[in-house]
Image (cartoon, rainbow, N blue to C red; front, side, top):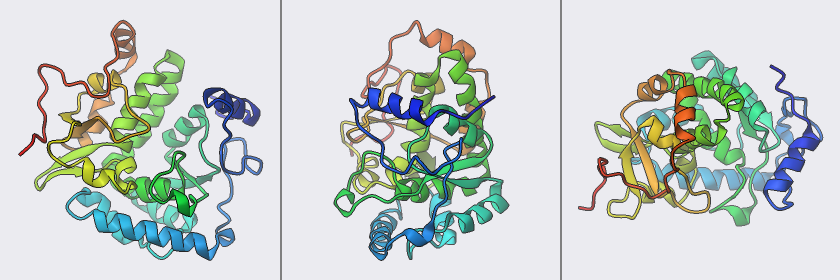
Amino acid sequence: MDTSVSNEDFLATVAEKSNGAALRGDYEHMDAHYVVQQNWDNYTEQEHELWRKLYQRQSALLPGRACDEFIEALAKMDISAGIPVFEKTSKELFAATGWTIVAVPGLIPELTFFDHLANRRFPVTVWLRKPEEFNYIVEPDVFHDFFGHVPLLFNPVFADYMQRYGQGGLKAMRLGGLDELARLYWYTVEFGLINTPAGVRIYGAGILSSGGEVEYCLTRGTKSRHIRLDIERCLRTLYKIDSYQETYFVIDSYQQLFDGTAPDFTPIYQKLKSMDVLTANTLLADEIELLPAL
């Protein structure tokens, strides 16, 4: 399959979807698969200092909230001093799980993204947010991509799940299932929670790189739902992009994710086309809230 995408076509699609908004990042100096050079020497001391502040804030929030696999991998990566060198971590990652990091200018086309994942390459944005975006940024930057996503790629089972998701994405593009499959990524890779012997913990990168949602998502008695992951149910559920999530899906293990994406999704996509989508705050009659108010 040809996974190269015209830059002009991609940017035109983004502009159409976002009322003319342009992407941040340098989209002129990249190859056909949206890969660029990190150019680590070009980062300023101000950017490294901002990274350190972001790292300090997030790492202080993680104990008792993030899953052990994330915390342990983050400690071994030793990336607290400044924006990491992608090549160094990529070599360590390849030795652990066969994954590598590829530098990208920012958001990339779905087809290209899925192809990278299917071939155990994780795209990481090269630019860092501005100081005024310390607490919130719309478009993912290097801190979200690297701090939030890369540590769990050192876990073999989760790494295999990510590859399987990329393979599923390439298939979903042929089957018209992209909207449904995107919800699975959102509710697992970005905003997933996991049951552990010590209680519910975070593994989703969107939460782990967020200042406020780390605490909110585990707070009992909020209006948000915390329910066990069912793949078909997840594929039906809309999500929020401009607020804390109104539903968090909870898994029991990364093996559950891997096994859950083993079946052929073709009949699921066909079934869902005739069913209504569920709003982000839905709680079905047979579902149990896993973090009820005390």
